[in-house]
Length: 255
Image (cartoon, rainbow, N blue to C red):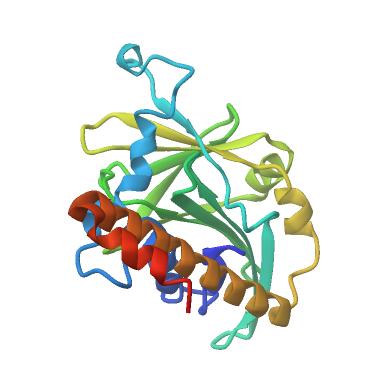
């Protein structure tokens, strides 16, 4: 189940902070370590090695394309609905998390469908650190026209970006193969994350997930994340401190 479904405030970004912290927890151990900034930026690093099929040194004139995949524990896009307590407006968002080939969290996105007298649709992203904020980002379905997005805030483990979209974008997203999200890294090089769009239309048009089911799935995911984070922490300790950490890692499961 998506980390982004931990959004508590459907109309704002405040609840996304929880999702953001969890998004970076696996590679960065954000909840256990006081210095997550550098490791949290690592999800963007697959941009260099990932294009195994290309030649990074010869792609100076074009973007580096990174094909991401869905978070394994989230088999499908998830639709969540609720009401804005201030306006009594129904708000639904369809969301999914994406990881690198190594299973590290890369980005998450949610497409908001705000009902009411002034309906609007908004795409929100949770992006890794280590990217230039001033250019913002651009996203397009396949080879379609790009939509600019702006960063709205950053936390120690990542940054939020968003953009309003129209019905024609939603329609193309439902039929498209990829949502191409383009950013610039610290060296000013363009990186494009190719996000698979399969299943988005079915989830966007379908019924929302039952809140009780959502809560149970998220509880299970959090337990899996904590286990994975501990395993990665033990590996880091072994690589940094030699064999001292190995016995404790092996002895822990026995009780």
